[in-house]
Length: 366
Image 1 (tube, one colour):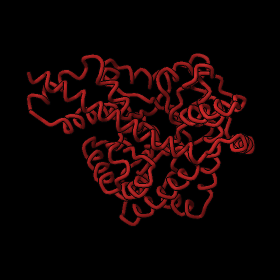
Image 2 (cartoon, rainbow, N blue to C red):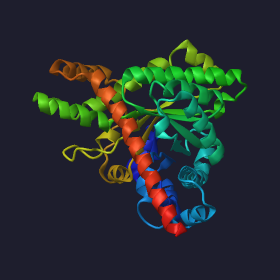
Image 3 (cartoon, rainbow, N blue to C red):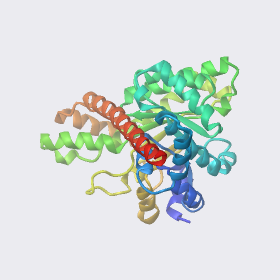
Image 4 (cartoon, helix red, strand yellow):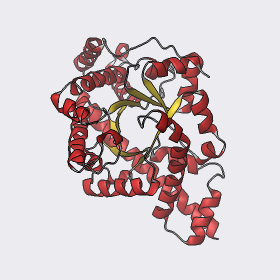
């Protein structure tokens, strides 16, 4: 058992694993991480599934059976991915029960090709909720302009949502509003608000990657590696403000639980940075940190948990963002580029996953 991860958990940070694979499930690795590393949730995305399918033989039997049945590639993709999510949800079910549904969650993303299509995203979310058929699943919906009303409508149907690909403070505020509206509609539809959970996945390291690149061109290397953390801290400040409103109080009185900020993309991209910094510098109650396994192991080995590292540091964060603006970094352009790239990367991964499955189906059918 890692004392460092135990301390992180005791600070109010839910530790989630940003990875899933059939091999991890078959070998019992996920159970071990829950038991020894304080993991209480799992996230997935198209890139993670594409990587899992491309190596090993864990999927061979299911792909062979799908080939015999003659199913199309899209149907096979959902059969394969939802199988893993369902299995992981069952492994995490004791955590879900122990935490009264707050943790023990597993996320699966809607088809990223639908990122800008509201109605199709809602239909896909409903289909995934039905296919996985577990109360501890999160349906991931990107925080695009088309995704915002889909988030509201999905929540209104009593479906728990992980809002993904959030980069800007403005968009995060819109996400919280979409969450509130969804809960208000869910209450009107007769749903028990205490059974609906949501997290807002605010991406961290990608912000530094994009801003650092611009700072290099501007010759301002002194400002590198700080924007992702500053941006996330200001998001937490907004979370506090939004949960202090009368609108939230009314929902809370009706049984609702807050939409926790989730720190995503917490693996360090630049080897010059401390490999645990996106965990150590983003510690606060009611948050989730979803980590790649390498980051999880690094924190367990040499992480330094110094208590709350978010609250009380908002002015410092604002000063850094102001310094970036003065240096010539266009924040609005940065977050626009990151959202567009994020959707594109997931779409590319999903298409790659479909191509991999297509080849496997053809190979097993021959």
